[in-house]
Length: 301
Image 1 (cartoon, rainbow, N blue to C red):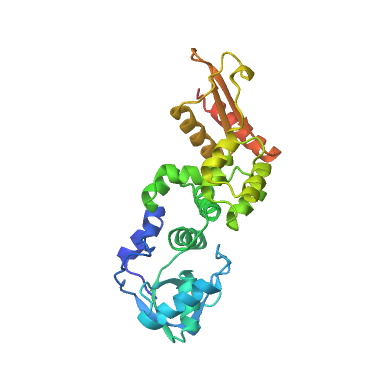
Image 2: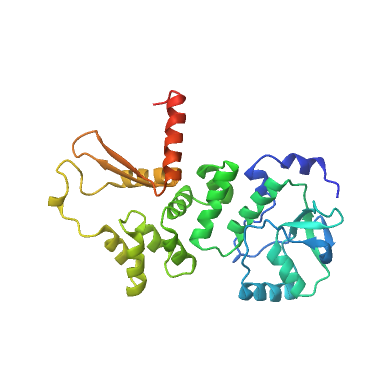
């Protein structure tokens, strides 16, 4: 399908251009129908084999099917010409709507057809998952990490384009520093994001996570448990026992930027201190060394 010049100019300009095709209206607010480019025979549409989201729950699909039967498809699917079959179309965004439309026995669906390369298709799919799907905190964090690592987006750029606060994105990214076993507990709902955040700086987060689940502890109880018993006499005399809000905020920012655990211990009454970066494997150690080498090679302080 031919594309107008105005549509072509929007492509390749990064996240903001792609976001124009993704509806950001909260699902609990009324939505004005968007005007589709056309309607497409549902039999000519195929799912994207590289779709990041693989799980479509039966309950969610059933609810969406009922909604489509009653009100139709409010938000058009975003498609591109199928690169493997030029007579058909491939889904860029809207696979859940497509599946539900099949269940509702629709023969055609409203669609917006775009010229997108494989990289842009993946980027849009990730963005749509973050904006639309009922993701848990780990899935959302993984989506942000993909957008940053694969496409070079910064936290600031993501926050602006997705309508999230930078602190929200940074806090979720910090969750990825936790052991996989703890992240699995968040995925299945045994732990909330608040519980998980409290465990990020803990010495043994997995053991504490198991204790939290077993005892049914609240987030506040988890925070106290993660801190552990603090005895001033056990601390070095030149280290501040309690960290101020600015120090904790800086630790969070550095941890999110490095995707590693970071601790800052400022010497009381002095301008010096110690910063500790903890790596969980040799790959992370190599990444720290690489970043330091690049910094030194560029002559930065």
